[in-house]
Image 1 (cartoon, rainbow, N blue to C red):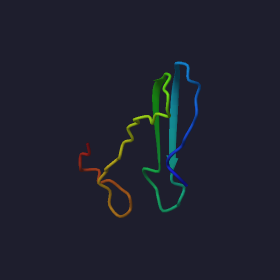
Image 2 (cartoon, helix red, strand yellow):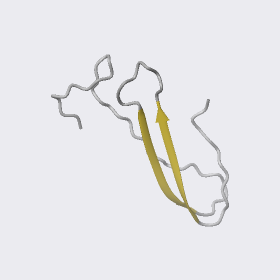
Image 3 (cartoon, rainbow, N blue to C red):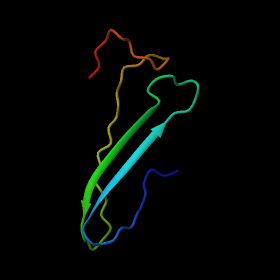
Image 4 (spheres, rainbow, N blue to C red):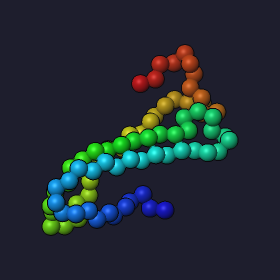
Length: 76
């Protein structure tokens, strides 16, 4: 499955919202099993397809082999 999607929208100015939800359903994952991210943006007319510069976060959480964070360590 590709992570890229080509979606055509009308060329008139408009507001859009893109929602992304991810989830792990395996019994091996007890914590940190889902994320939700949303982007809101306005569109306008362009002569060619224009990629959206959407920022996707990467959660670098210090977990152990069980996907658990030590409760005594502050994480930023």
